[in-house]
Image (cartoon, one colour):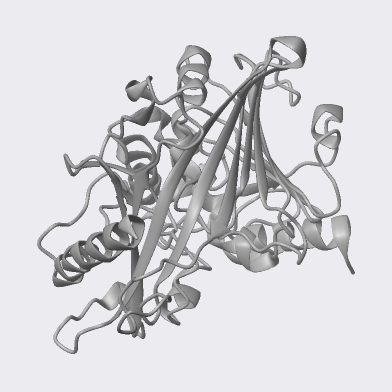
Length: 396
């Protein structure tokens, strides 16, 4: 059993074993806690973020955490359509998200059918640091703009409905198989691709379009995988961002007296962000270069963080804007907001003229840093070391 057949079987199994639904969609008995669960998931999906369009960052986070075939350049595409391919009643167009990852597994589907479950938690606790999401609730944010999000990946073709099913009394987490893949989705869907389709609720399209237009190139700066991001609106390329990394040896950096190599565990590079807007003869390209310095420190014995159990060391990084690739008379092009990142941007600003990144423990919304946690205080101090080392390396 594989592909589409396996996908349908997994969806049927989840509906049967988790939600007590038979083949006809009838439930054997109604759990008295269903109404409370439905209200809780609704509150979570609607109240998780102060900005209802924050779900765009969640989609980028999911793409960053996905697995990719060796030799593939991880990329993400977001296309805003005038017409919903699923024909959802009342939909104001749709947003199509395409990612060239390996594809969904049964455990990924099961995690989406839960609240707070994530396939990333155990792997992050192993200490790899490769996964920036671990709360298992981010995908629920798409319900702010879509009442019927759909996923097409690796033979798993299914959707969730915001409105409760009559049989279970539950929405949001009960999967429903989609038997026919729309042609507009087929155009994006390849054997190693995942496509998420979000039919947009009335009144949401303009807000989503503004959010897509506001994605900064620096969104990709501290990511390890996603190197290309493409945004298309009604067939017109709005923006394309490409991240290029050129590792360097920072002469005179700490590590050896008068030496020419980095401190143990540290890394240095020039990161270039190329942004293309428009298409054809009307296209424009902008370039931003950053001096990137990552510093690794061993976890102190007195710093305990349950969400990072098993972690022995962590890297933090600073990114200093460079003049290269910019008209030296146009100093405005060098302006840097000083935004603080936890791989993706948070709503926290440091008020320093460069960017900071660390694996901070965040609020559930990923918008703010839990500033008093020992783990975060340790990372804050590590960032000071990263800046000093990175700046001295740049001067050399």
